[in-house]
Amino acid sequence: MAVQGLIEQAEKAHRDGQLDTAVDLYLQANNQSQTADAWFGLATIHMQQNELAKAEAFFENALAIERNALDINFNYLLCLRASNKFQDASERLYELSENVAKSDPMIVPYAQLAISLSAFDWVIQLSKHSRCTDPHFIFCVAQASMRLNLWQEAISNWQRLDKQLPNNPQILDGLSQSFASTLNFDTALAYFERYLSINTSENDLIRAADLALLAQDIPKATLYLEQISDQGTEAVLTLKCKLARLSNNKADAIRIANLLIKMRNDCSFAWQVIGELGDSVQLAQLRAKLPALVASATTTDFERQQNLYTLAKALEKNERFDEAFSRFKSANASQQQLFSLQGVTYSPPEEERQLKKIMAITSPSTGRRSEHTNNVFIVGMPRSGTTLVNRLLSQLPDSRSVNESNGIASCFHNLFSGNYTVEIAIEHLLSRKEEYVNGYRRYVNAKDEIIIDKMPHNFRFVGGILSSFDDAKVIQMRRQPSDLALSIFSQQFNHYHAYSTDLKHIAHAIWNANKLMDVWSKKFESNVLDVDYEELVSNPQKVCQQIFSFLGFTWSDKFLDFYKQSVSSFTFSEVQVRQPINRKKINFAAKYKKQLVEFEQEYQRLQR
Image (cartoon, rainbow, N blue to C red; front, side):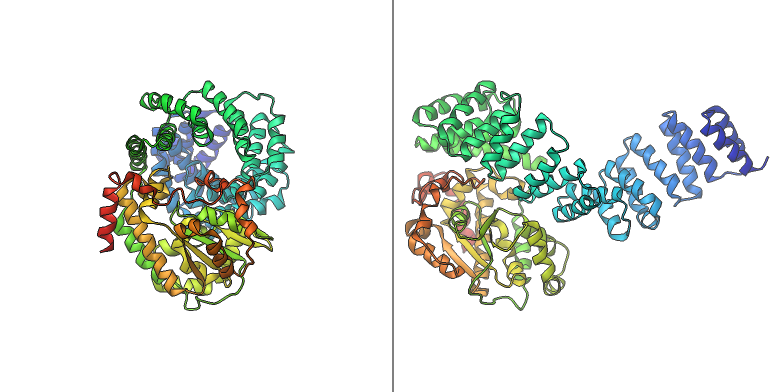
C-alpha cells in the first residue's frame, strides 16, 4: 500500500481510538518513506499516553522534515509545556513569530499558548505584526499588557472588547484592575460595579469596598461593607479600620486595630494604626509588645519590616533616638536583603549615566511662558513636601489631583531609559508630542479640569513634560538634605527606590536629583518653580502666594485650613497632611547626628 494510504488509515484508526493499530500503520508508512505526517501522528499518540520523552523525540523528527509547520510546532510546544520545559518552548515560540503572524487561523491558539508559557512580550510583538481582530486574540493582548504593566495598552484593548462584548465579567474585571493600577480609582470602581451586577460574592464585595476606599468614596465603602455577611474576618476588619481612618474617626480605627491584633498579634497594619493614632498609653503598650514580636517573627518579611518601622517611630516619639535608629537600620537591612533576592540594586554610575542622557533630551521648543495652566506637576525626592503642596492645590475649583500617577512614566520611561540615542529621542519628542499628551490624559482619565500630578520622581521627566505640554508648570520641591535622608530612611519603599535602604545611596540619590533639578530650574525658568520645604512651613502664606501666582491661580488664606478636610492622600505623608502646617520636622535630623555621619560625609564628598 502507498505511504499516503497508510497514513490515511492510521489517522482514521487514531480518530477511532484504535491507538495500537494507528501506531502500527504509522510505522509501516515510515518504513516505506519517512514523512512529517507519520512522525507527527506517532508523537501525538505518545503524548496522549503521557509518554512525553518519546513524543518530544517524534515531534522533533517531524520538524526535521517540516521545520515551520505550525500545527506540528503547536503540539510540540504543548509537549514541552507538559514536560515543564518552559524555556525551550519560549525559545521555539520566538522562532515562529513571523510565520504565526501570517496565519490568521493559528494566531489565537498560539497567543493563548504563549499566555500559558508567560511569554507575554511575544503576544505584544505578535499584536504589532498582525491585523487579527478576533476577540479571543484581543483578550490575550489585554492580558499580556497587564502582566507587563502596559496599562494604557491594556485599557485600550479591554475597552475595545467591552464594545464588542458588553457585560462580560472577565472584561469588566480587567478594566477595573487596569484603571486601579493607573490610580484611576473612580473609573475602576465604576467598571467593577458593572461587574457586580453580573457576579456578586463575598470576595467581590470586599474588593468593591476596597476600591471605594481607594476612590475615597465613604458612602459606597460603607454600603459594600454592610452587605458582607461575615463581618469578623481579618480582611473585613482591615477595611473597616481603613474606613475609620479615612473618616477621621480615630477612636473607631484604634478599636478595630485592637481587634485585629487580638486576631493576629503581629498584624503590621493594626500596629501601624496604633503607632499613628494611639495615645501615650497605647504607644507605651506598642513599645512593650512589638520587640518580642519582631524578634520571633514567623510572618512574611513585609510584616516584620513594617513592624520594625512602626516600633522605630514609636521609640522616636518617646525620644529614644538610639533605639529608634537601630530599628530603622534593621528594617532597612531586611528590605535590602529582599531587594537583593529580587535582583534589584542601586548603581550610582548607572544613575549618573542616565542623568546625563536625561539632561540632553529636551525639545528646542521648550521654555514657553504660559500665564495659566491646566497641568501642574509637583516633583522632587520622596518626603520632600510634594503631598503638602498637592493638598494645598487640590482645593482649587475645577481641579483634580491624580496623586502619585504613573502616567508620565508610562509615556516617557522607554524614551529616556531605553536604547534610543539622544538625537532620536529628541526627534520623538518633536514628532510625537500630541501622542504623549493624549496618552497621559487617557492614563489619568483627564476631563476639562486642572490636573495636579504629584508623582515625586517625575523630576526625571521634566524635560519631556515641558517639551510636550504647552501649558505645563512644574513645582520642584527641595528639602534640607539630612532631614530628607532621615525621612527616607525611616520609611519602607518598594524596589523602584532601591537607594532607600542605604545611607550612602540615599546621599547619592539626593545629590543626583538636586543636580538634575538645578538644570531644569536654569533651563526652564518660566515654567519651573523651586520651593524650599523649610521656607514653606516657616512662612506658608508668603510661599503659597508665590506658588499660586506662578501657576496663575488666585490665592485664599482659607486654603491653609486644608487639614480640616477629611481627605486621605494614601501616601506616607497621610498623617502629616491632616495637621496644620508646622515646623516640627525642621532640623529633626540633628537628633540623629551621630547616626547620620555616614550620610553627611558621603553627601559632602559628592558636592566637592
